[in-house]
Length: 268
Image (cartoon, rainbow, N blue to C red; front, top):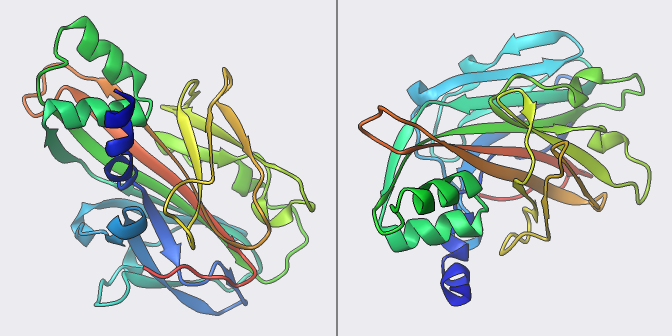
């Protein structure tokens, strides 16, 4: 079983999904190309979803909440351009609609084991379904933190939930951390702290595997030592059993948080 889990680790992590500005650090009134990426290491690619699959794209910043769906205009090398006029830290939040997935039982069992999806593991074991295909509907949630200029004023919206159904909430602004200070995050699922979720930290410039993984504690918290250089992804997956849906047995949500330092960038 250990071999099986390792064998499917790369495809499982290929579920990584995130918002990728070309630059996370901008000057006021500057803009940067934005791409929506999915995958991991050699599996990385542009997200194939069309604009009509985007339920929301909003920014939270010094000027309040702004609908940003109009910036999406996918082309050969980007999905849009994003920029802001006022200095500060901006939270860009994304949500997709549902898609469907059916995997052979061996692959699905290994995937839910690698990702620590205990609701699916327990439900399939308890209903003797471990040798049936894994059927799920799934959707995506993502946030990116973009620093504009050099604002010294508090940025309280950075550490507050945006209301996404599965959300990684930084409890400190990553751009305001002291040297060697860890970044604490809290995982919320349907508005409540989520315990026992596998939270992963990945350096997007060397993303063959995560650099750290922690289970969220009873309060939904995890903490990471993040160097103040490069571009970073924190992500988490969770699922719940559903009934009465002919398409699937589980409703799975993927969520991520990205940020970057020093003008570094990660290429799709």
